Image (cartoon, chains in turn yellow, red):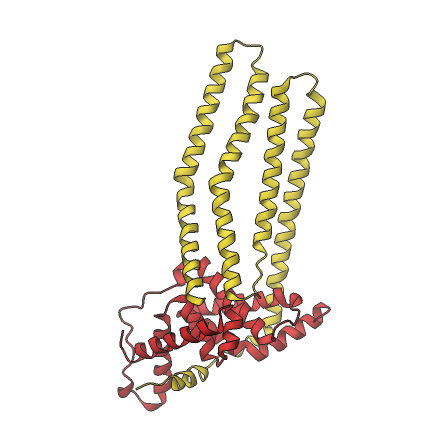
Length: 199
Length: 170
């Protein structure tokens, strides 16, 4: 018959490697510096990208908006909104990487579940917002550049663009993201199960 | 709190020296495979280093460290699903304690204990690793965030299950 005290004594007496303690600080500091360098680089690249894209869009708008009508304004506004949405999502994802680990297990699990649900929402809802804004930007652009051609030409161009965006959006939602969504659902299930097992 | 990099290094070294054995045993309880447990151990040290400047002293240092260890283990497993419930190779047999020399008995018992812990659910492995570290119910409740009553009930249930597994009962 085994008793728990015996198990505990046996567990606590197990040998533990001692040889890495002295180097632990150097190892984690190196890892930390690499991590910080990577983060700084990606933040700088992301910020430069936003500044360049924003400047180009603003320049195009102020240079040409007198020459074109409302579809041009609509396409510029859509492109700009797309960029803002992308920036918000990028910063939000960056924020997600900053995990707070010194909270209680249940709080940590709640945070993780919240993040996963947000990711799922983004995958399922953001895609539609993105598609609509992209569609509006392209429609505005097509209407403007084909206005000197025939109506049939404009309508054909619009029909091809609509079919293309609809097909890509549907393929994305029901094929490409299927695996990703399944993984998120599995993780949410695991975390919820773990939370109810601890509570 | 450490004010500069040198203080931080010194403080970190002290923390690691005082707690490395407990952290390592938690890793071994949570992950049966030793190489994954080593990876988790490194990850926990890294997370302690990352969080060291945010430690406000609101909880005991040990509670703070255990919280980081437990949460890192949860996150580690979610990122590495394959580490969970590793299949035990067919050739692996738990040694028959009666038939081996006395000096190997302790290691054999320990191996069997590790194996039995690996049969528990992930959340139960976390809790039992804290119990085996002789943490009180109150401390375990603080680390996990569960109520004291529920913690007590769960611990008794997990202990019973572990003892049954050690006795080769289901």
